[in-house]
Image (cartoon, rainbow, N blue to C red; front, side, top):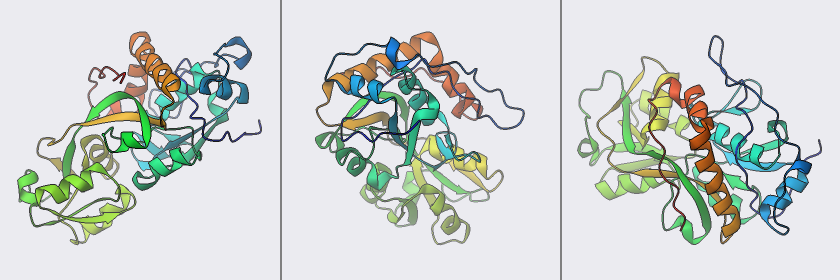
Length: 290
């Protein structure tokens, strides 16, 4: 299918698209089902949902370097919990997963991509906060994370955020964890992706990496034996789905889709097949219908 780029109509969707089988060898893959045909779905004329349904495609920004949530797979398609949430939304729009265009969205370009219409939605471990809500809207939250600390496996000196004061700590430009590090008196060393923090940690340029606990757990799992997550989370990071500012109908519709996925089990199935291989399932937060 030829993919059509829609200008900044933040297109939305949610769920009946069964999670695709992208599990690694021996893993249990979610059962695949067929998304409804776009002709079978009806949306109010003039809405983002109607435009996306008619186009038969959606462009979703996500991370490509974060195990468990958004990691580029060998097939050339990203895998992870955020990716599965995107498939659920697309399915509710009548869009099959093969018609999703995935765009790598790092922390620094998420708002510009939404504002410029380069993506329809962003699902990328994207913390909702008031500053970001001045330029984009958020559906959700659909998951509550918290900032934590990754250190070398043999490090016994850093046990909490207090031990980061005055120390070089790697994080990512444009992220809320980077702001928090400066606030607590650490010395942020910034790069564009969290995976790029691992080599500086290995060679001693930084003493730790700090971001959301779920991201750090994925990095530790991917590099077994090298790193460990220490301390308790010291912030709350509500993950939301970014979309165009003031597209209230689309935002409310995505919130409906999220709540449906909680009730019908597709949300937990997405978790169990991805992040749930490392992290326990917790009940999702109630979307904020601001």
